[in-house]
Length: 190
Image 1 (spheres, one colour):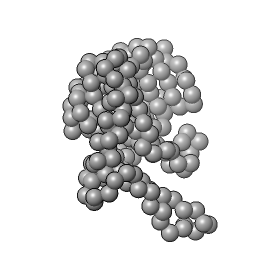
Image 2: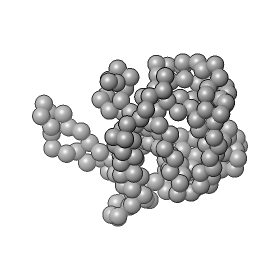
Image 3: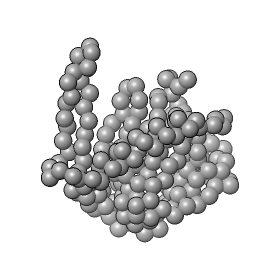
Image 4: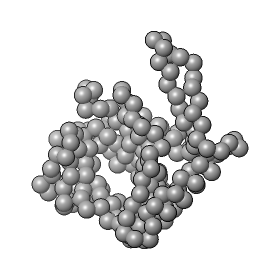
């Protein structure tokens, strides 16, 4: 089930992630609220859009998810974008408070990039999932994993977890992060 991730796959994913993070944290213009800007129509009349989040937007959303997570053992996530039909790119902003994921997960076609906004979060990455259960096409969960490595990520750190890498997480105190998930849908894989 292992596949070597090509340098092109990694560079493409990391480039998209870094560009998204830089755009989200730059806040170079004094605008408030997410701005949806439609470009000229593409051939066939389709009109894609993009969303810009200023630093103030991210700070406001971060405050909201931190308040939702509260001080109890919980987490909160809010979508910044949705997947497109041809290339999946999903962005989330989340906060966790004294929360430990109840399972390890792995995706066949989705890479995850985590950018820590505040606090610290423990990532359990790699290893071999014990008795994985396919919860949906291309996605597995397992209650345990052997041989994983624990990495503590702090404010400003970026963690890249490529597809097919088991992962789980733990937040002993509190953390907030941006999560970018990218990958082709299963039916479009080579």
